[in-house]
Length: 290
Image (cartoon, rainbow, N blue to C red; front, side):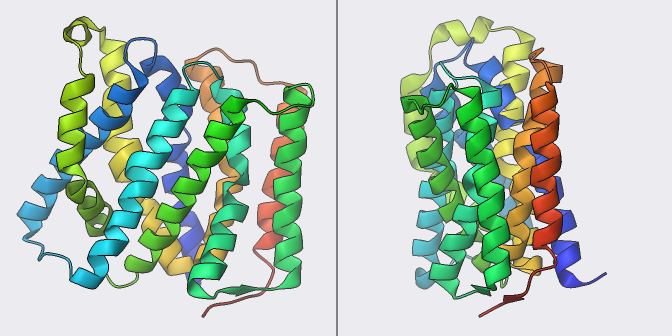
């Protein structure tokens, strides 16, 4: 098995974990304030990360790497959770899943600009085709218009992509577990304060489903999923492995049908087949790594 294939398989495990984020967030916002979910889940994940780093006796990051961890934190610890959780207070997870389907192209573009990966023309065309399919799907589902919910999701997706690219680069020289752990620990003081400020006593009486959803977002979406995602990106290359994200909207649609009772339509299945086909085709295109 070559590195690119291995990276894509490892990255796909991370995508499967991330694919439940929107449906589970939709469940959580029924009981919790979206800002408490965003800051609280990062706070809990940060505490687990601190325990992990202490157990592994990891040394402190260098000054040069510290700024990179700040960028990762701004992207995946603050930006993506806040924008997407707020969006889920009114939007549907199914619609959000499709909008976030544009993330692979954004990740590729950021990777090319930041680290000089050089995808071939064929790769760009296939990536644009995948993104175009997602846009067409979104327009068909929303009667041909974009809403402010779409805007929140787009901003959240861009934040995540920035964090993905920076984290993938650090994961080439560090354990991916340590990369996401340091990003969470560096941002932990802010999350502790904001978690306390946004907490309400009535949350104590939230049901087991609400708290299970919160725990999933904290431990899996915010932490464990990055173990696989960063490692996959580091092994297989940002431009290549990022295309696995094109399958995430349809994994999310399946999760939403199971967790929320959303119906799977023929259009969903057709677009799923077409988008996954672009991932397979894109894997065959040449990418020169800087």
